[in-house]
Amino acid sequence: MIMIKKLTLLLLLFPCLGYSIENKHEDYDNWEFIVYDKNINFYYVNTSLIKEKKGLLTYAELTDYPIDFEDKGEMSHISLVVADCENKNISLYKRFFFKQRGGKGEIIRSLKPQPEWMDVSTPNTVGNFIISFVCEFNSMTKKFDKIKKQLNRTREDV
Image 1 (tube, rainbow, N blue to C red):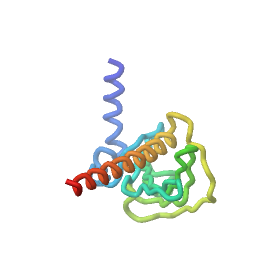
Image 2 (image 1 turned 90 degrees about the vertical axis):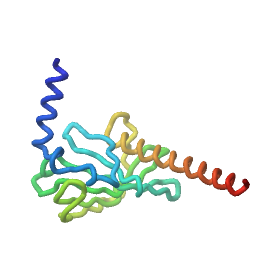
Image 3 (image 1 turned 135 degrees about the vertical axis):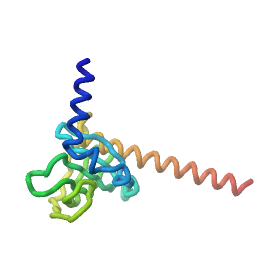
Image 4 (image 1 turned 30 degrees about the vertical axis):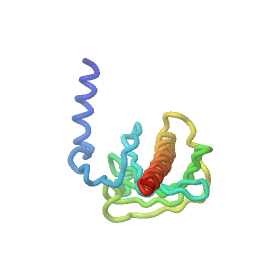
């Protein structure tokens, strides 16, 4: 019974935050939902932009805010991130802040922080969920590509 009340409250709350009305599934075609945090920020990764170079991965991460972030007119940001899967570290390369959710609308500002590695190895944290997804997705993609090549070779031999 308590769970039903919590679910009902949550369903009533989300329309107020704009998620059920403003954001449609097609707005996020290139983005894979990963996790949300206690502030109801939603985190996504663009799987088509995950690239590997010199043992590191680069990817784009989208964060949607439930309300205007720090009263600056920002409803989302896209971060370009470098990931070290082996050590569970990330480094933010660049971040763009947008007027609308989904990384849409006018870019309000951008940020290029000093390069530094951040440890995201702590389980059940947003950073850990994201790096785990990105690293596993890349690993599975490489395995899939290897299988495709083997199948193509087998077809050529037949």
